[in-house]
Length: 294
Image 1 (cartoon, rainbow, N blue to C red):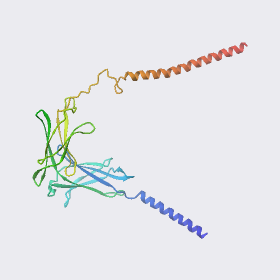
Image 2: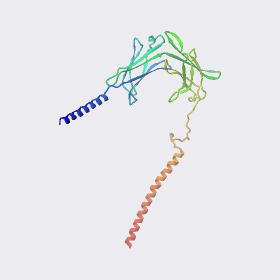
Image 3: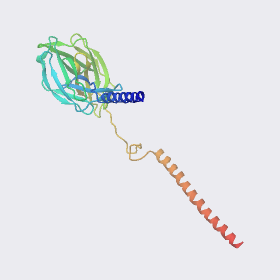
Image 4: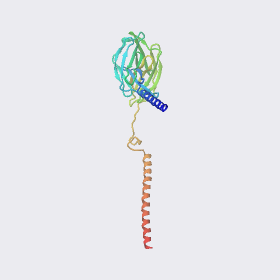
Protein backbone atom coordinates (compact mmCIF):
# COMPACT_ATOMS: atom_id res chain seq x y z
CA UNK A 1 0.00 0.00 0.00
CA UNK A 2 2.83 2.34 0.90
CA UNK A 3 4.58 1.58 -2.43
CA UNK A 4 1.42 2.38 -4.38
CA UNK A 5 1.02 5.70 -2.57
CA UNK A 6 4.65 6.58 -3.32
CA UNK A 7 4.20 5.83 -7.02
CA UNK A 8 1.04 7.97 -7.26
CA UNK A 9 2.77 10.87 -5.49
CA UNK A 10 5.72 10.68 -7.88
CA UNK A 11 3.40 10.73 -10.91
CA UNK A 12 1.56 13.78 -9.57
CA UNK A 13 4.80 15.68 -8.88
CA UNK A 14 6.21 14.83 -12.34
CA UNK A 15 3.01 15.98 -14.08
CA UNK A 16 2.99 19.23 -12.10
CA UNK A 17 6.62 19.96 -12.97
CA UNK A 18 5.95 19.38 -16.70
CA UNK A 19 2.89 21.64 -16.59
CA UNK A 20 4.86 24.38 -14.83
CA UNK A 21 7.72 24.08 -17.33
CA UNK A 22 5.27 24.29 -20.23
CA UNK A 23 3.61 27.31 -18.66
CA UNK A 24 6.95 29.08 -18.20
CA UNK A 25 7.92 28.25 -21.78
CA UNK A 26 4.69 29.69 -23.19
CA UNK A 27 5.05 32.92 -21.24
CA UNK A 28 8.85 33.31 -21.33
CA UNK A 29 10.44 36.54 -22.52
CA UNK A 30 11.29 36.26 -26.22
CA UNK A 31 14.26 37.68 -28.08
CA UNK A 32 13.66 40.55 -30.51
CA UNK A 33 15.79 41.60 -33.49
CA UNK A 34 16.29 45.10 -34.87
CA UNK A 35 17.50 45.92 -38.38
CA UNK A 36 18.31 49.44 -39.57
CA UNK A 37 18.90 50.97 -43.02
CA UNK A 38 19.92 54.48 -44.09
CA UNK A 39 18.26 56.39 -46.93
CA UNK A 40 19.05 59.82 -48.38
CA UNK A 41 16.52 61.06 -50.92
CA UNK A 42 16.95 63.29 -53.95
CA UNK A 43 15.94 66.38 -51.92
CA UNK A 44 18.57 65.61 -49.24
CA UNK A 45 16.17 64.21 -46.67
CA UNK A 46 17.92 61.70 -44.41
CA UNK A 47 15.93 58.79 -43.01
CA UNK A 48 16.48 55.68 -40.93
CA UNK A 49 14.33 52.67 -41.75
CA UNK A 50 13.75 50.17 -38.95
CA UNK A 51 12.36 46.62 -38.93
CA UNK A 52 11.63 45.01 -35.53
CA UNK A 53 10.81 41.28 -35.51
CA UNK A 54 10.95 38.13 -33.45
CA UNK A 55 11.33 34.63 -34.84
CA UNK A 56 8.82 31.84 -34.51
CA UNK A 57 9.63 28.50 -36.17
CA UNK A 58 12.48 30.28 -37.98
CA UNK A 59 10.03 32.74 -39.56
CA UNK A 60 10.09 36.50 -38.78
CA UNK A 61 7.04 37.89 -36.99
CA UNK A 62 6.50 41.66 -37.07
CA UNK A 63 6.32 43.51 -33.74
CA UNK A 64 3.88 46.47 -33.97
CA UNK A 65 3.35 49.34 -31.50
CA UNK A 66 6.89 49.23 -30.09
CA UNK A 67 8.78 52.42 -29.26
CA UNK A 68 12.18 52.89 -30.93
CA UNK A 69 14.67 55.55 -29.78
CA UNK A 70 17.23 56.97 -32.20
CA UNK A 71 20.69 58.38 -31.44
CA UNK A 72 23.75 59.71 -33.26
CA UNK A 73 27.37 59.68 -32.08
CA UNK A 74 29.57 57.21 -30.31
CA UNK A 75 31.27 58.58 -27.19
CA UNK A 76 28.54 61.12 -26.43
CA UNK A 77 25.11 60.19 -27.80
CA UNK A 78 22.89 62.81 -29.43
CA UNK A 79 19.21 62.01 -29.03
CA UNK A 80 17.44 62.29 -32.40
CA UNK A 81 13.90 61.29 -31.39
CA UNK A 82 11.57 58.32 -31.12
CA UNK A 83 8.87 56.61 -33.18
CA UNK A 84 6.44 53.69 -32.92
CA UNK A 85 6.55 50.67 -35.21
CA UNK A 86 3.57 50.16 -37.51
CA UNK A 87 1.58 46.95 -37.90
CA UNK A 88 4.39 45.55 -40.08
CA UNK A 89 6.95 46.25 -37.36
CA UNK A 90 8.59 49.04 -39.37
CA UNK A 91 9.51 52.68 -38.81
CA UNK A 92 10.65 55.33 -41.29
CA UNK A 93 12.31 57.94 -39.08
CA UNK A 94 13.19 61.35 -40.56
CA UNK A 95 16.42 62.94 -39.27
CA UNK A 96 15.41 66.57 -38.90
CA UNK A 97 18.86 68.05 -38.26
CA UNK A 98 22.00 66.53 -39.74
CA UNK A 99 24.40 65.74 -36.84
CA UNK A 100 27.58 66.48 -38.78
CA UNK A 101 29.42 67.63 -35.67
CA UNK A 102 29.70 64.03 -34.39
CA UNK A 103 31.73 62.79 -37.38
CA UNK A 104 34.74 60.60 -36.69
CA UNK A 105 38.12 61.44 -38.33
CA UNK A 106 37.09 59.49 -41.47
CA UNK A 107 33.81 61.35 -41.88
CA UNK A 108 31.55 58.58 -40.56
CA UNK A 109 28.58 59.12 -38.28
CA UNK A 110 27.34 56.37 -36.01
CA UNK A 111 23.55 56.03 -35.95
CA UNK A 112 21.96 53.72 -33.41
CA UNK A 113 18.43 52.56 -32.64
CA UNK A 114 17.26 51.04 -29.36
CA UNK A 115 14.22 49.05 -28.34
CA UNK A 116 14.01 48.94 -24.55
CA UNK A 117 11.92 45.76 -24.46
CA UNK A 118 8.79 45.01 -22.42
CA UNK A 119 7.23 42.25 -20.34
CA UNK A 120 7.36 39.74 -23.21
CA UNK A 121 10.31 40.95 -25.34
CA UNK A 122 14.01 41.39 -24.63
CA UNK A 123 15.72 44.69 -25.57
CA UNK A 124 17.29 45.03 -29.03
CA UNK A 125 19.59 47.50 -30.74
CA UNK A 126 21.17 48.18 -34.09
CA UNK A 127 23.84 50.56 -35.37
CA UNK A 128 25.17 51.94 -38.64
CA UNK A 129 28.29 53.88 -39.57
CA UNK A 130 27.34 56.20 -42.45
CA UNK A 131 29.50 58.55 -44.49
CA UNK A 132 27.19 61.29 -45.77
CA UNK A 133 27.49 61.20 -49.57
CA UNK A 134 26.05 63.66 -52.09
CA UNK A 135 25.07 62.99 -55.67
CA UNK A 136 24.70 65.38 -58.59
CA UNK A 137 23.28 64.25 -61.91
CA UNK A 138 23.31 66.02 -65.26
CA UNK A 139 21.30 64.84 -68.27
CA UNK A 140 22.61 66.08 -71.59
CA UNK A 141 22.88 65.10 -75.26
CA UNK A 142 26.51 64.70 -76.33
CA UNK A 143 27.13 64.10 -80.06
CA UNK A 144 23.50 63.07 -80.53
CA UNK A 145 23.81 60.56 -77.66
CA UNK A 146 21.65 60.84 -74.56
CA UNK A 147 24.15 60.81 -71.71
CA UNK A 148 23.89 60.71 -67.91
CA UNK A 149 26.74 62.38 -66.03
CA UNK A 150 26.89 61.73 -62.29
CA UNK A 151 29.24 63.02 -59.62
CA UNK A 152 29.54 61.71 -56.04
CA UNK A 153 31.39 63.29 -53.12
CA UNK A 154 31.41 63.53 -49.34
CA UNK A 155 32.83 65.86 -46.69
CA UNK A 156 35.37 65.19 -43.94
CA UNK A 157 35.99 68.03 -41.47
CA UNK A 158 34.94 70.60 -44.05
CA UNK A 159 36.99 69.11 -46.91
CA UNK A 160 35.14 67.77 -49.97
CA UNK A 161 36.46 64.43 -51.22
CA UNK A 162 35.39 62.38 -54.27
CA UNK A 163 33.60 59.07 -53.74
CA UNK A 164 36.06 57.27 -56.01
CA UNK A 165 36.16 53.63 -57.08
CA UNK A 166 32.57 52.84 -56.16
CA UNK A 167 29.71 51.26 -58.12
CA UNK A 168 26.67 53.37 -58.91
CA UNK A 169 23.44 52.15 -60.47
CA UNK A 170 20.93 53.78 -62.83
CA UNK A 171 17.20 53.15 -63.01
CA UNK A 172 14.01 54.40 -64.63
CA UNK A 173 10.97 54.68 -62.39
CA UNK A 174 8.15 52.28 -63.17
CA UNK A 175 4.77 51.62 -61.55
CA UNK A 176 5.74 48.63 -59.39
CA UNK A 177 9.55 48.65 -59.29
CA UNK A 178 12.44 50.62 -60.75
CA UNK A 179 13.79 49.41 -64.10
CA UNK A 180 17.62 48.99 -64.16
CA UNK A 181 19.16 50.68 -67.20
CA UNK A 182 22.87 50.67 -66.35
CA UNK A 183 25.75 50.39 -63.91
CA UNK A 184 29.01 52.30 -63.84
CA UNK A 185 32.23 52.57 -61.81
CA UNK A 186 33.13 55.99 -60.44
CA UNK A 187 36.60 57.22 -61.47
CA UNK A 188 39.21 58.82 -59.21
CA UNK A 189 37.26 62.10 -59.38
CA UNK A 190 34.02 60.44 -58.26
CA UNK A 191 32.46 60.88 -61.71
CA UNK A 192 30.86 58.56 -64.25
CA UNK A 193 29.21 58.78 -67.69
CA UNK A 194 26.65 56.37 -69.07
CA UNK A 195 24.76 56.26 -72.35
CA UNK A 196 21.01 56.20 -71.84
CA UNK A 197 19.03 53.54 -73.79
CA UNK A 198 16.91 54.82 -76.66
CA UNK A 199 14.09 52.26 -76.41
CA UNK A 200 12.56 53.06 -73.01
CA UNK A 201 8.81 53.88 -73.20
CA UNK A 202 7.67 57.03 -71.45
CA UNK A 203 4.31 58.68 -70.95
CA UNK A 204 2.26 60.36 -73.69
CA UNK A 205 4.93 63.07 -73.99
CA UNK A 206 7.91 60.75 -73.55
CA UNK A 207 8.70 61.91 -70.00
CA UNK A 208 10.76 59.65 -67.74
CA UNK A 209 12.09 59.81 -64.18
CA UNK A 210 15.78 58.79 -64.19
CA UNK A 211 17.41 57.67 -60.94
CA UNK A 212 21.10 57.44 -59.99
CA UNK A 213 21.60 55.47 -56.77
CA UNK A 214 24.02 54.00 -54.29
CA UNK A 215 22.01 50.90 -53.40
CA UNK A 216 22.54 49.84 -49.73
CA UNK A 217 26.21 50.78 -49.95
CA UNK A 218 28.41 49.61 -47.08
CA UNK A 219 29.62 53.20 -46.45
CA UNK A 220 26.92 55.49 -47.83
CA UNK A 221 23.73 53.47 -47.33
CA UNK A 222 21.10 54.17 -49.98
CA UNK A 223 21.60 57.56 -51.65
CA UNK A 224 19.76 58.62 -54.78
CA UNK A 225 19.25 61.49 -57.19
CA UNK A 226 16.19 61.79 -59.46
CA UNK A 227 15.60 63.89 -62.56
CA UNK A 228 12.69 64.14 -65.03
CA UNK A 229 13.30 64.47 -68.77
CA UNK A 230 11.49 63.60 -72.02
CA UNK A 231 13.93 60.96 -73.25
CA UNK A 232 11.38 58.17 -73.52
CA UNK A 233 9.31 56.90 -76.42
CA UNK A 234 5.86 58.55 -76.29
CA UNK A 235 3.15 55.98 -75.65
CA UNK A 236 -0.60 56.29 -76.08
CA UNK A 237 -2.88 53.84 -74.33
CA UNK A 238 -6.18 54.56 -76.07
CA UNK A 239 -8.82 51.86 -76.23
CA UNK A 240 -10.87 51.82 -79.49
CA UNK A 241 -14.61 52.11 -79.03
CA UNK A 242 -15.13 48.82 -80.91
CA UNK A 243 -12.54 47.00 -78.81
CA UNK A 244 -13.95 44.01 -76.92
CA UNK A 245 -12.25 42.44 -73.90
CA UNK A 246 -13.06 40.98 -70.51
CA UNK A 247 -12.54 44.38 -68.85
CA UNK A 248 -14.60 46.45 -71.32
CA UNK A 249 -18.32 47.12 -71.16
CA UNK A 250 -18.93 45.01 -74.29
CA UNK A 251 -17.92 41.35 -73.94
CA UNK A 252 -15.86 39.57 -76.65
CA UNK A 253 -17.80 37.86 -79.44
CA UNK A 254 -16.42 34.43 -78.57
CA UNK A 255 -17.68 34.80 -75.00
CA UNK A 256 -21.16 35.83 -76.15
CA UNK A 257 -21.36 32.86 -78.57
CA UNK A 258 -20.09 30.40 -75.94
CA UNK A 259 -22.48 31.65 -73.28
CA UNK A 260 -25.41 31.55 -75.76
CA UNK A 261 -24.67 27.93 -76.71
CA UNK A 262 -24.39 26.91 -73.06
CA UNK A 263 -27.64 28.61 -72.08
CA UNK A 264 -29.42 27.18 -75.13
CA UNK A 265 -28.26 23.71 -74.16
CA UNK A 266 -29.48 24.10 -70.58
CA UNK A 267 -32.89 25.48 -71.58
CA UNK A 268 -33.30 22.83 -74.29
CA UNK A 269 -32.91 20.17 -71.60
CA UNK A 270 -35.57 21.90 -69.49
CA UNK A 271 -37.90 22.04 -72.51
CA UNK A 272 -37.26 18.38 -73.31
CA UNK A 273 -38.13 17.34 -69.73
CA UNK A 274 -41.36 19.41 -69.80
CA UNK A 275 -42.42 17.86 -73.14
CA UNK A 276 -41.74 14.38 -71.80
CA UNK A 277 -43.80 15.07 -68.68
CA UNK A 278 -46.74 16.28 -70.82
CA UNK A 279 -46.50 13.20 -73.03
CA UNK A 280 -46.42 10.90 -69.99
CA UNK A 281 -49.51 12.58 -68.59
CA UNK A 282 -51.40 12.22 -71.89
CA UNK A 283 -50.39 8.59 -72.20
CA UNK A 284 -51.60 7.96 -68.63
CA UNK A 285 -55.01 9.51 -69.43
CA UNK A 286 -55.37 7.37 -72.58
CA UNK A 287 -54.46 4.27 -70.62
CA UNK A 288 -57.08 5.04 -67.96
CA UNK A 289 -59.78 5.71 -70.61
CA UNK A 290 -59.03 2.41 -72.43
CA UNK A 291 -59.25 0.51 -69.13
CA UNK A 292 -62.70 1.88 -68.28
CA UNK A 293 -64.07 1.04 -71.75
CA UNK A 294 -62.81 -2.49 -71.44
